[in-house]
Image (tube, rainbow, N blue to C red; front, side, top):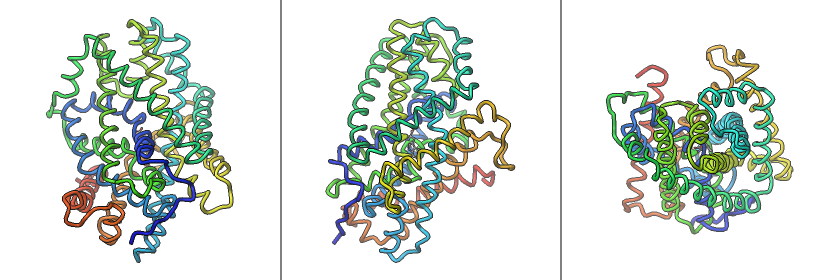
Length: 457
Ligand code: TRP
């Protein structure tokens, strides 16, 4: 008999809300900003193909594992892992996986919130019509004016993280659930409007060509590394965000079924984001491979010169902000849930404590882009604080977290517990495929990528 536990933080009112919340976590700057420029840089359709394989063979099975762990434990990732390890007769050290996730979440949110601040800044600029008729140079100056200014970067970062705080402090039902049920439909509506517009521009055919015509000549081991890292990042895997959302999932909801929806919507959004962004870039005769500046420099120029550019610009940056907010709250939640569980603090105070700590790290990340650009925290890494936080969290902690999650679930936990929580039969195809992918494919892929990234392979 599976134990029926309840979460002290409350539950989503339905499986659909869980799908919205987890999709909100997954769909973020990773889809709308990072995915399009990675496609542009790494071989178009060839990259898309490898990315889809990573999503299917590594990301999906690990997401199922995370949701399952969360719902089994019904607590923050640290405590869920502690309780499950005890019940399964495994080492209590497995809770370190939860701690690693909290550290990763802190690191990611500190730079994510800085970029979230930029999306707010750009929304306001767009609303004020600041892009009307600007040249590439001027757009570059707008961006530089923001990033070079310690006050602007820290100020907008502060505004962004305050929004996250207000939502998370209000709790699962009144905060997170309310936010995602309002914001996610808005996000989808904006996205659809932007793609419909993209189809009417002359650049749509070129976009389809660019995104789906594979160029295997530029594919190498680094491409695979990038694709796998992006798969983890875009699905919010490896740090307990999806696990903590799973802790609030109603007991009767199917985990493989909801996961399929989340993965499908995330992937669709990434591709649609490309189909929405590139046509306007191509139609304006600009270059797509612009790295990080695609969204913040190229697009403002484009919005400044095309018909309806004002409305499209406002919609686009509002979309970006919404997506960043619904992702940011999932980065905050594991630590807030943990502190609420182990201290006597009310959720609002726990949220305040966590937000303050992350805000401080975010200030350091933001200042490393301007007045602290020479500061190096780790002597062996020649990267500023912002880049260092991104590198360690996305390239090391997330894959490591995913690897350990897969090992824990597929090699250490008993088959009986796993089957009952997933509500599957041991002879069923779904279970067999999931187990094979989680046992063999996911760990192998992550290890190979690791060895490569430290130069051993
Ligand atoms: N998935 C989000 C994006 O694509 C970012 C994100 C939110 C995330 N929560 C996470 C990444 C947890 C890793 C882990 O923008």
